[in-house]
Structures are given as structure tokens and as C-alpha cells.
Amino acid sequence: MTFTITRRLRAAAALVPLAALVACNAEPEPEPQYEADVEVPSGSELIVTEQDPAAVDVEVPDSPMTPVPEGTASDAETAAEPAPPPASATPGM
Image 1 (cartoon, helix red, strand yellow):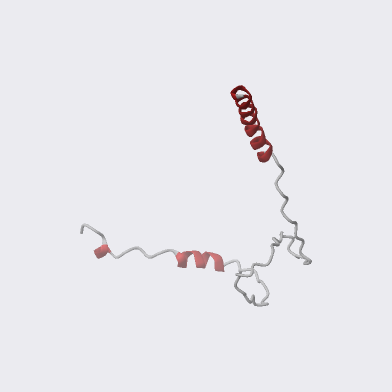
Image 2 (cartoon, helix red, strand yellow):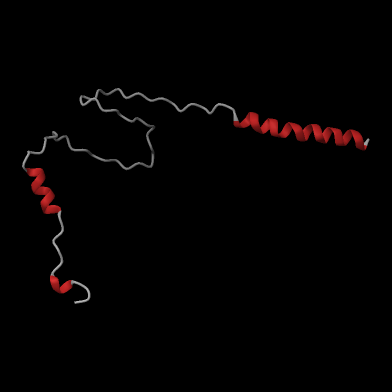
């Protein structure tokens, strides 16, 4: 009787890794594909997801996008540079 139980346990133990392998190789459920009923004139890609009930409502203004004039970009870059600290603020002096 002990011999039969040991044989059954060995057979069951051999099937456990096989069952784990089958479970890991199962195909995952494909994500749902959503399509937007909107046409984007710029040709960029829209990312569509399900509506989130915890999301915050945002009102986007309907103002047209305009390009930045040529000379303005360099003026903005120089204005964004930090001023050097005063000489008296240098440590060790």
C-alpha cells in the first residue's frame, strides 16, 4: 500500500510543473481597442481610453494656435537665464 501511495505522489509531483508551465503560457486577454470618432487635422495620433469616474473635468478654451514670431524665441531664452550672484554672496569671501 505504501508503494502505491508513493507512486501516486511522484506522478502528481511530476504534473505540478507541467500545470504551471501551461498556466504561464496561456495567451493574455487582448486589451480592448477604442476608436475616436474625431478627425485630427495635424495628423497626430489620438490616445483613446475608457472614461475615468475619478477624473477631474477640464474646460479647454477654443482659442486658435498661432506660431511664435521668429525673433521672440531668442529673446525668451535670454530672459530665462538666471542672473549671476552678486560678488558679496560668494562663499569664502
